[in-house]
Amino acid sequence: SAVISQKPSRDICQRGTSLTIQCQVDSQVTMMFWYRQQPGQSLTLIATANQGSEATYESGFVIDKFPISRPNLTFSTLTVSNMSPEDSSIYLCSGQGAEYEKLFFGSGTQLSVL
Amino acid sequence: DQQVKQNSPSLSVQEGRISILNCDYTNSMFDYFLWYKKYPAEGPTFLISISSIKDKNEDGRFTVFLNKSAKHLSLHIVPSQPGDSAVYFCAASALRRGSTLGRLYFGRGTQLTVWP
Image (tube, rainbow over all chains, first blue to last red):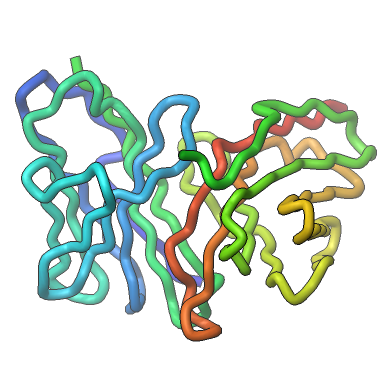
């Protein structure tokens, strides 16, 4: 099973600032994704991180707010830009290996915006 | 619009008894279903899955049942153990080209508490 390291595990940020979350997988994965879990809500897909090209964003999420990079098959970053209290959430990265049911998750980043 | 629904936010069960977690979905295109378990401060971990060509899949103490006509699935844990206490997420997807998993849609999760 792949192991995904995600950092930071938590952060408290001021309104208007930006935070970059890093995700490192210990083996190559075909797909990488970023999810958000707002309090009491389900996991919502933000975007698919594409290696060497622009991420594919889901409805309601835009690149200016959530820029994503994936320079290689094992690493990705998500930036939460110009943060507001509504961005307070858990952000999770995930990877999908060759076996389609094996979607692995990082431990998550608990973000609180004051 | 919530395509995968877990209507019970919490469930409390005594150790040794059966835990039944329920999940409903609305999209008839979904043909692959998964359950994930999440402990505090950890990411979700894959637990068990089922394809729409089956109505039951079993793995040790965990069994998932699928009722396609009712668009309903359930996870049974027998016997329940205190270590099973976690949030359980139901997820659904439509397989692409028969084997590649499409986007996962998650329910809001059910907090299971197993007490001694």
